[in-house]
Length: 359
Image (cartoon, rainbow, N blue to C red; front, side):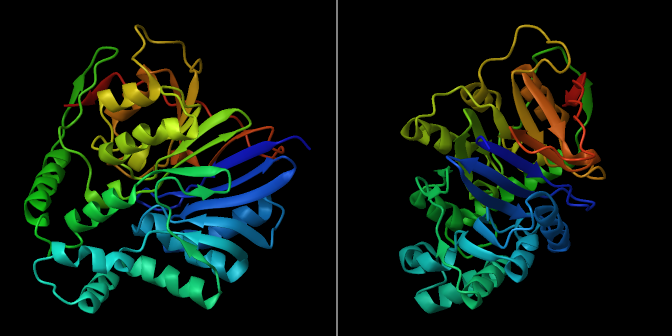
């Protein structure tokens, strides 16, 4: 069988959006299973069922990647440890760097106390660490440059990650965090008061502030499979995606030029900007193309009942650059190349171009 890949964005079957992305691919006759995120804790059973049904009931998963600690990404991964032998767990654990961080926290002078505090703040990661240790699964840190099968981590670098741990709302005892927390809270208040305005083709209005430090901790992964350039972004924001773009030449990736891209953070406006999308995807087209005639695919994981995601401005911005945007709002999505046929799966119509955007 020739090389192939299939990347599945599962419907997490929740009122809020989440990410569960099992992947199977073959390179040079060798097959790999690579799971990035598992949705909410209740998503775990659906994730296992999907892998068994469509990946030929494997006994072994090569790599499990935790993009970041949020429960809508990490919760469902626990089920994998009960059902498969896992080759490696990739996740970032802030308490491992307590000795490097201790001087940046105003209330802590003892490394052991800081470790305990960080573990209390990141229970999802602690639970996965305990499972991995119990099952004797090695854990690796997915910092920039790490190779996970045929995927490469573009962000975060270790230095950026440590900065983000200090800045995070989850660690309010740090010297730097109070003012940034106020800014993010204000951003949420403004986001909830959004009105819509009619907008011409090409018009884009993004908030000035970036997403949270927690989201910018997201592991950004890149792979070139079957000649297709694939970018998985999780909840990465502008800081993370710019750092990833800076690193792209190190993996032979010339920007702009992505074929399949995960729209960050379920289509939130705070994760991207006009300048950032120009960098990754190219300049806006001068006129609106015909439906379904896009030059690349953009996938957004969004629950049908989630009123906050995806934002119209974001969908417009991807279409402005020639994307066919598809969403999990009506069910799970698979994007692939030379992938085995699946009975009952049909082509997905791209999302229509929104004629208005958030003001």
